Structures are given as C-alpha cells and as structure tokens.
Length: 288
Image (cartoon, rainbow, N blue to C red; front, side, top):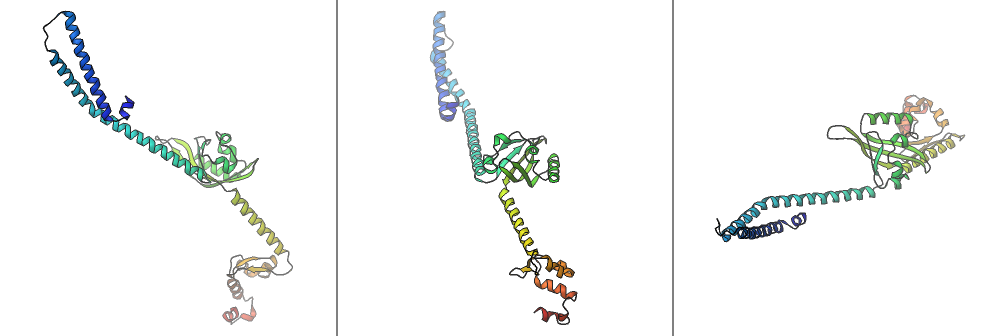
C-alpha cells in the first residue's frame, strides 16, 4: 500500500476501484452459488440489480476513500520533503564544520565530552575516541592556570555561558593552547543537559606572542647593558624603548618617560619642573 501511495493518489484510487469491482463480481458469483445450492428460484433482487447495487456501492466507497487518500499522500510527500531538507541541512552543517579550522563539541550534564566534529584530531592531535567520555577537568585542568580554572569550573556549575576561555594542556605532542566558547543547553522542561560550543587551537599565536615577549626582554637587557644613555623613538616621535640610565636621568618626569609617550610631551613635562634652565621664559621657542 505504501508503494501505491508513493506512486500517486490516482493509482491508489484506481486500485481501490478495481478491488471494489472484483469484490462485487465475487459477491455476485457467491450469491448465484448459494441460490443454486438451495434450489431456490425466487430472489428478492435480480442478479443484474444486485450486481449494479454492489458496483455502485463500491464506486461510492472508492470515491469516499479519495479524500483520505489524497490527504495521506500529501502528508507523506510533506514528510519526505522535510526529511530531504533535514538531510541537506545536515550535509551542509558537516561540510562547514569540516572546512573551518575550529571544531565543535558537546558535553553532558556532568561536563564530560559526548561529541566532536570531525576535525578535532587534525587540529589538536587528540583523537575523538580518546576524548569521548572524559570530563573537561581530566583533559585541561592540570595544564591551566589553577585560579582561572577554578573560576571556569564554578561558571560551569552555575550553567553560565563560556566566552573565549583559554585552556592549556601538556601532552605527548607538546603543549596545546585552546580558546573555547559555549552555551548551556536545557531541555523542554528546563533541565540542564550540558553545553554546546566551539574550540580553536591558538597554540601558534601563543608561541608567537611568547617569542615576541622574549625578544623584547633580550632587547631590553642588551640596551640596559650599554654604558651610554639610550632612548629609541619611532617615526611619530613616540618612545619605543629606553635604558635604565635614561630613566634615572629623567626620574622627576618618569611618567613621561614611558613607551608610547611623545617626545614633545616628555620635554614639556621637564619644562614644567624647570629641568631646562635655558628654556625658562621662552619655552615654545626652545621646543622649536
């Protein structure tokens, strides 16, 4: 019957009509057999009348069935269309998830992982099979900042959103830094079900920042080792770096002796304190 409905309501109605006619013919033949076995000749209705009545009744029944059949066919077509849209949406979602460098994740009400998108292993070196069922604390807690991690766990217990939280893990593949965000999930009755979120591997960015900081420290150390006073300004006359001897010389205007301060502002701070006697009374001209 389901195959007939999928072929369209016209075929379904034709099939019911055919079945109805065959049923009428069979009933007529049965009636003839019964009257013959009883040896009766008087009949309340003639065979033709009975056949016509049965066939008419069958057509009426078939026509009456048309309405439900059309409705059932329409409902089935809508269901199939909804299923096709759902499959297409799932494929689209999977394609987007696999193309991005970020990955998607889900955890249950106990904060244990229950699902990852397919690129988690490519981005972190950790397989989904190894991660599945483990809690966040088991994976990330040890390598992260203790105070920040405790605060993060408290936020999870309060079912608060996660926004750009940075986690660190030491593993066989080295140190991995991850930025993660997520939203709590509740069912129709308001019961907490876990979290859904997104993660991104920021290890390369963290390493680059650390290397930049290390280079700045090495530069500052080298400058401080100079025997001369040293200060470096950029093309906009803003201080970039200076050594300790320069800071000691300008101890009275130390706030104006910081990276980012304009050289003119540094000089004006000294003028206000009278550090440049030759400029007293002609400060603007001296600045020129």
